[in-house]
Image (tube, rainbow, N blue to C red; front, side, top):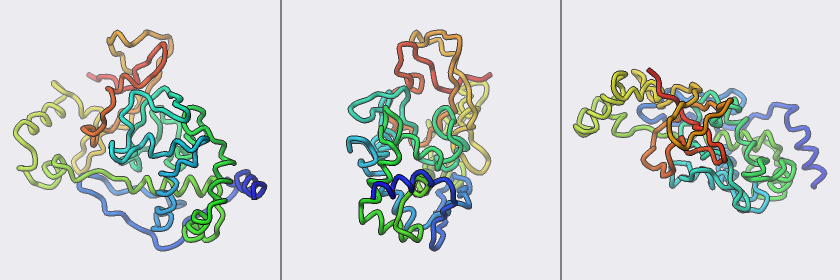
Length: 287
């Protein structure tokens, strides 16, 4: 079986595997735009169920201690609330975990934008030495050895085997269903309910959008019909914090989306690097 699993991984990107069954169109919460769903990975009940099982499965990590949900905890708005995320054996990364909520709307993934889709993103943490630290071939072998996974794969893709491409598509499909909207802000801004926000909150929203005062909406965008609260642009912060050490090369990051930020119990974005020479990984203030 191991040999078959290795062959499955080695050939996993040579074909296009599309989930089978009735396509699902999730209900979009008030305040969010139409959901982009790639043609090669339509949402189905079975592919979402498979992705959910994978998302919470610690066997995708080397020592069975870490799952996707370890860093993207539903109880913490799909973050981990840490300054920097912890992987297998307590290994520390260099950034904190961004929320997966509304990640379906992002054009690029990871803080530095190195993945172009949720599918591209989902496989990377499995092999990362400070995250799940497990070779993709071993991950595929493990899930194929589980009869429950093979049954789910048959329902989702039409055959019982799972390769890396199917694993990535299933996880990405599940993540596309993680949507956050219909908040008091949305009901006030888009639902016509002017009692949804308090007077203090309304004053804060005015400041948030005012370029002469808060200027927050420059990076955390609010459009006429929807708001994902990020312009998806990459900027370099010139923070004057004593934490920031001037370096010849600075790293840019995407403006973070801030929905459910009241649940994000971690530090400010400028604390995302765990390094002797920290770099502020948040959007710069803009005039």
